[in-house]
Length: 210
Image 1 (cartoon, one colour):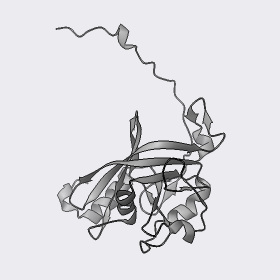
Image 2: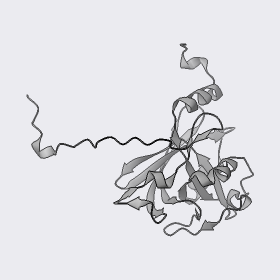
Image 3: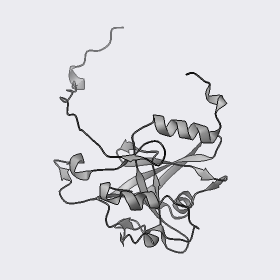
Image 4: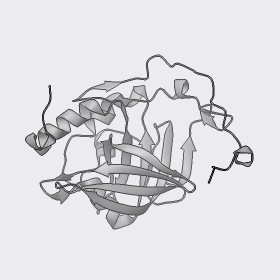
């Protein structure tokens, strides 16, 4: 099967791409609305973009040309929290994607306890095994539908005791949720360990021939 990308409308393209770019980690973002309530929404176009300082990026689309509550809250407040859900939180994570008026707190609606931020005013989810407190860094628009790539600098890590060993996360213990096409999710499944690739010190690299 072969067809040009221009044959697809935005909805068709999203359905196709969300089944191709898999699995995707999920940023379960808490933000503060104009009434001081905690909005909560999952976003699966999410990655890290820098390690010094630590920065993460999340793609947030628009609805009918308008920013979604999360994007609007981030721009208004300048801070947000990326919560990482484990398998036990799949149901509330999925339910938090349902649309509600901006003044509704999804955290309160779903009965999820929140804890105050340490470095920023945005609360984090108490049940999340990992939460990243972020300060807004930048936003870049892409494409014709108004989608925007939000970048935040991580200013505080919250990691459940026992998840970090020798500076690394024990992914088996974390049991994260990933998103695949449609309303479908997956767990890690089998983890295959290969030998580490040795890095050649720069001092022993030979200069290129002129």
